[in-house]
Image (tube, rainbow, N blue to C red; front, side, top):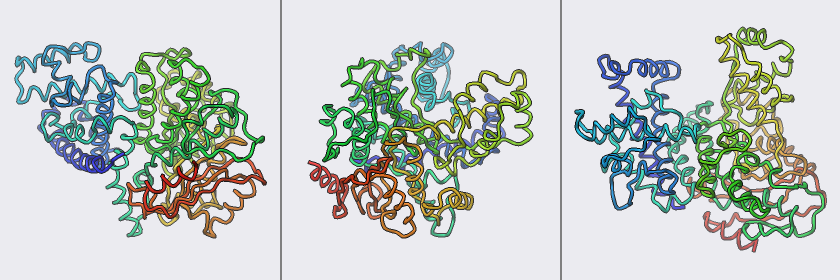
Length: 605
């Protein structure tokens, strides 16, 4: 995908939106503002949000919220997933968004827009209500209504717009210099053919903040938890994703079904040179659980969706049922970056719509509700001792074992330690079910504790279950960049790989996968050579099996300047096969992504 235009747009959009939100914030918070008179509750909520974090963080959050939604709406417009185009004209040669053009013609979707709002829009467009810019005001109401309508299908991305979020919405959405005009220019129909475009936009959106974090490192500023996502997010090129997924998920299926025609779809698959016997046996597609424990915007998961669809299709599953089956049974993502996790869930939903345009209308046969992607955002949870004691007294001390009390402390810095957390063992799902059913009765002051306990149990379940396949492009961060708490914690928990987060993820991912399962990763190449990783290498060589490796070296990531990081992509088997001869491909001489990609495909052929 051509990314130059996307990079320019995303960086411009971040600066522009933050400036516009900041300006509006000043007007809204002014002592005599119209917002204070007309929306006092919203302004009070806004001030509360600022006091709990900071004005800068609120500005950044609102700016990104609108960027996220505008990009998502544009993508759905271009793929026919909206009933009416919300940010795009009916014809690309036109300029006015279709939803506004239709409203001016008297056609406003009653299912999307509430009666009172519809009347307000009609009054603005007919001139019966005075306004300095009636079309602009009417369009803003239509966009908010559309976002709230999508809340039913995608609540993880389209939360109901809080009043203060609407108050800080950019003013100009219709001119040739508006943020939506630039969104349409960058997100061309061709660019929107693949949901991969959303991942690229996110990486570029946070790229300038990433630069700021690395400038701070030069001045010995450690990377704080809130800056870890910006410092470590790295969108994986599609050819590397294919190599990893095809040689882990695809390989597992081919070992179980050697006559499968799935192999015809896997250009990067390296078939075993000898017949294998000691592999993980899979009876049916729904038995495969694949997890990306640092999923970012979901690129690994979306390609796994494509392969899984082909597998289900080959098995004769009803095509209308396959997308829901995949989301319900097969794919799991874990992430500390809430924004990226929202996009991962969105990307998987777009994959479901790609294969079934009626996906939103279909309901789960089990629960009668829409199937949502399994994407877990790891959130820090700290419960004050006196609150926990009061909660225990209500729900019963028999449920609160020493292990559960320990577990509740393990997630106090979940935004710092992420998927590296190894939860203490217990039946999280059953305990969560019991506590959810038990509830807290009339003790409303304990509601926040109840929610926090259930959240910890949900997060622990993601981090404790075993998957047949784990794939990841984990965060890269050396010990010099780690904040004090993270640095101390990894020494205690990952002594053999403490030098960098990516190496710890090699260890952790092998914990997450079942015996004989597969782990596919792309990491920095340093673990292959440096003495600081000698124990890690010994563990892999003596207890695991390297199935295949593509040694990429430098220049494998054109989008970030390929010389920045030297990498290797590999697939590990979670068992020791002493006589197994892995497949190794040396690509360090390639001078670009394209060269390395071509070299790899040539060698495999």
